[in-house]
Image 1 (cartoon, rainbow, N blue to C red):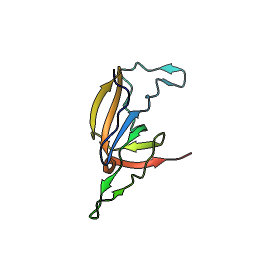
Image 2 (cartoon, rainbow, N blue to C red):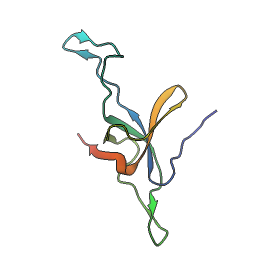
Image 3 (tube, rainbow, N blue to C red):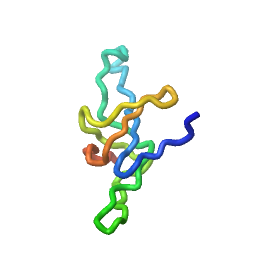
Length: 97
């Protein structure tokens, strides 16, 4: 049984935010809903190593909401949940409230 996923180096494990399925009282079927580019960070690697061998920490942390680039990363399934494993470079922005 899988206990914990730890991304390596500059990789980040994210889970997409569920697409809105109700607009103005109209329920949109899941198949017709567009994929959102928003995701929540689930796990983060240590970062890339610099020329001195020290890690450069990533700019995101677990729990951050981010904006993803289209068609980036590898989609994986863990415990019947869909996740995306991406490189930190594929993150366009960190969303703040």
